[in-house]
Amino acid sequence: MAHAASKSVVKRADEVPRKVVAAGKATETQVLLGPEDGMPHFAMRRFRMGEGGGMPRHTNTVEHEQYVLRGRARIAIGEEVHEVAAGDVLYIPAGVPHAYEVLEGPFEFLCMVPNAPDTIEILEPQSP
Image (tube, rainbow, N blue to C red; front, side, top):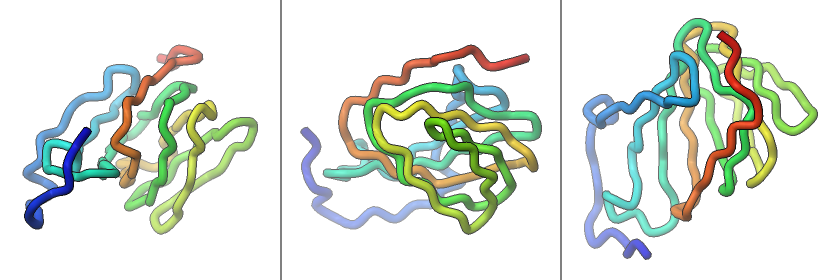
């Protein structure tokens, strides 16, 4: 279990290493703040999806709270489909299927998740 940070953490988001999201298309992520920084409860991640990018329908075992920074995307959450853009916020409950399709890239959002084990299950493959 992670312990509370004993000191403040300040860093440049653009200096945090990016990782390609293998299950996605033109998608990468960064853990801006997380357990490695001593965060006890939540991780803050930034996702960037390029033109034509997205994520196939999948589930996670942890909830997601998201804030859209730029771009536009169609996001399916359960049986509902939403078009989101900069300034929109969304909540995806744990275990609910969801998918992302970029409409205007780059699509970028912050995603806060609990510091708990997370398993992703792809429900359908990404279309080419």
